[in-house]
Length: 165
Image 1: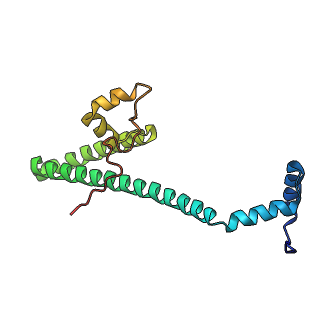
Image 2: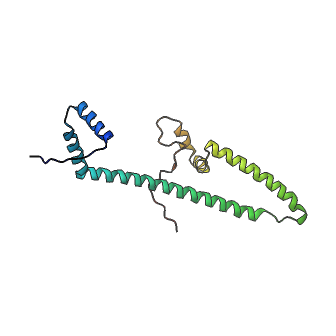
Image 3: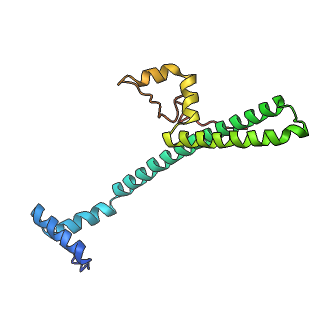
C-alpha cells in the first residue's frame, strides 16, 4: 500500500509536470515518485560526488598549469634582469637625458608589441614548447596527432606533480 502526500508546486513546475505526464502517458504521481526515488538513491549521491571530483581534478590541473606558467614567467624575468644588470654599463650624467628619452620610446614600442601579442593570443610558454619540441608541432598538423599548439602541457607531465623546494 502506498502512502499519500500532499505537495505544493510552483505553477510553472506543475505545468511542466503535467506536460511530461501527458507525453509519457503516465500519472504525475508516478513521475514525482521516480524523481524522489532517484534523488534519495545512493547512486545519485555517487554520481554527484563523481561530478564534483571531476570538476576538482580539472581545477587542480588548471592551477598546476598556472603555477608552471607563472614559474616560467618569473624565471624568465629574473634571468633577463640578471643579464641586463651584468652587461649594462653605467651612464655618464651627460648621457642620461638621451637614455631616458630612448628608454621611453622603447617602452612605448614594448607596450604596443605586448598588446598585439595578447590580442593574437600569442604565448611565450607555447613558443618555448614549440622550440623545445618542434617534432610535436609538426605532428600537430596531422589529423591523428594528440598534441596541438594550444596544448597547455606538451610534455605530457600534466598529471605529474612537481614539488619545488
